[in-house]
Amino acid sequence: MDAFLEGGDEEEAGGFTDSQIQSLLSVCNTAVEHPLLLHQGGPTYHMVSNAAILLCHLLNGMHANRNSGDSPGEMETALFEEVLDTFIAVRKLLSIHRRKLPVRLRCHGIPRPNFALEVNGADNPGAPFIDLGETLMCGCRGCQGFVLMACSPCVAAERAQAAALKAESASEKDAYSIGEVNEFDKELCDLGVEFDLDDDALLNVLSRIIAT
Image (tube, rainbow, N blue to C red; front, side, top):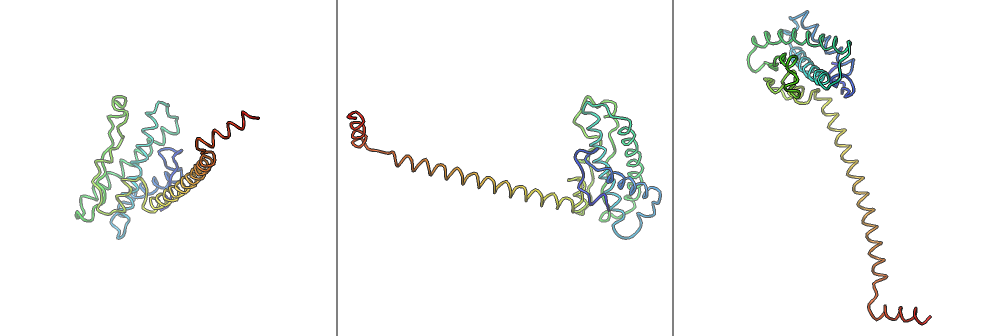
């Protein structure tokens, strides 16, 4: 559950924190080592499927970083290979289990990695390593959020709340700025009224100036 409750970090590899990555790998490796866990009642199967989906997002982010022009270090390369091996294993397990289930109980149908990008990545630099647009999504809206938003529903709710607060704060600042502008315009208008003299009054003022 730790991987589902953290909001991630854009500065880390693929947008995930180190603890998230370790949690995701632990969940998927446990499922591979003990496949009968998928047959348990409850959300175990769906949790493992969504952990695999998060690995897809992680791999896509790491692959994009590798193609950005900077040569990856040894640790980044080793991590990418470890995550990829885990993903391939858990995807195979989930695909076999999914075929045995009724349609209504099936979670995501997870697409394959596009290994051709490793060879011909320069020809299509914007293509994702795993095209999640080809995912056969689960009927559960909570599970769909993992594919569409790369996070759990609770993290998505926190992000939405933070975005709403930020928008509200920005609107308050805009309203305050508009209020200041309106006061400034009012002062200019008052000055204009004060110095808005008709022709006779203006000639009178000029004649006094000339007389002195």
